[in-house]
Each structure stands twice: as structure tokens, then as C-alpha cells.
Length: 311
Image (cartoon, rainbow, N blue to C red; front, side):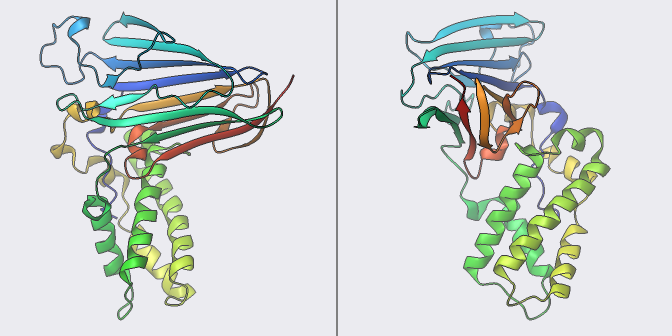
């Protein structure tokens, strides 16, 4: 499936910019937020001898006396650390804002809130969005998927526009989440083991396609036809071609546009998890997510954990 082309200049982008956030919730619902924003000296740099003060900055920072801000430089990386205390019941805050270096346009921002749902039960909720998403109708991956699906369908079977849009959107977003997280994503293995990553991609995409076909095309495709269409589409998935696709069209500057920022999120609290879409550390009880910001380009990414505190 040649429409899987979201990996862009992988080696050049890794580590250029990243964020790490930790939220510690107290038993009374108060919480402490710490965010580390790290940029590499080479991100968009034309002068390798520039001082740390002259390094480009792909982030905007929240303002206000409630924030504590520190900076540190080690080797070729600069880390800005932001922290603040938040009282229980306060409204949501935004502390990660990515910007395009040239236009200064916001390309990514988050919204974070901890709220009490019932006595002793709280929810951590973080939403990460692209304020200016590309129109889905012009998205390259979407266009290529529609072409691939149209060719793979049995002769005489067509899809109405609404069904095609629904399936295309579902597939492109699923591809993004499989590749970039926060689920068990293949980004790292795609670089070191593209063949293995391609096989994992086939398995996961096949399951997504099977569910989508059963939902939208059960009246048009029987079991044998559905399997044949999925087999045709999966034959186009190849880890090496995914890895190398579009490399010539991109540059490390893409990292400063917010698309390939590595993001790590951790939540700590004195209690037990009721439900979550994150991973749970069985030894510390912490809930965490890791992903690339590209996963939120077409549709907002929502991180949730509902927990009961021990008082």
C-alpha cells in the first residue's frame, strides 16, 4: 500500500525536538505539572557555531507568575523545564505549543485537565490537536488509499462517496496511530528492522480493514471477496518502501513544524486505575504514553486515565 508514506526523512528527524511531561496528582485532587521541552542544536540551524541563545526554538511557552522556568544546555541539546502547581477544580491548561519556525504559526497544542468525577474518583484528560489540519480531501495518504481500494475491489463493486470517505479516514488515522503511537507503534523498528515492521504493519492493518469492511461493506462483499481485497491491499505494504518513501521531498526543517516531535506523557497518583487508554506500569502504578506528534495531525489525540485515590 504505497499510501503509507508518512515516515519522512527518518534519520534526520529523530531527536530534533521532543517533550516529556509528568503530572503528579495528590489525594485531595491538587496536581503538579512538569514539562521538559528539548531541542537539538541542529534543528533548522544554518550556523553550527551559534550560541545556545541563538538556537531556533520550535516551541512557544506559557506565561504567568505561576510557572517556574529553567533552561539547561548539555552537549548539543537545550532543555527548557516548566513547572507549576494546580489546585483541584481549576480549569484546563495548555503548556505544550509547537510552532513553525518561519511563519510562527501554531502547529500543535495541548489541553490538560484533572477533574473529580465523584468523591475520590478523578480523571486525567489531555487532548493534543493540530489547530490547522490539512483538509482531508487533499491529504496525499487519503488520495492514495482511495486509489488502492478502488483497484482492489471486485469488478462491478463500487462505493458511494460517504462510505469511501468514512473508510479512508478510518484507515489513514489508523495507519498514523500504528506508525506513530500512542499504541504499540512501529516507528522505532521501522528504522532498524523495516522488514519486520512491514510484517507487523500488515497484521495490524489487516485487522483494521477487516473490521471496516464488515461494518461498511457486508452487503457488498462476501467473506471470500473481503479476504481477497485485503490480501491485495496488504501485498503493497513493504517496510523498506515505507521507510524510504518521500525522503527526497523532505528536510530536517520538518521537525520544526511540529509534525515529528517525540512526546512522552506520564501521570502519577496515590491510588488505583479504573480505566485508561495508556500503558500502566505494574510496579509503580504510573500511566504513560509515548508517540510522535504526527499522530495528531488529522484528528485530535485524547489521553485518558480514570483513577480512585487512596486517602
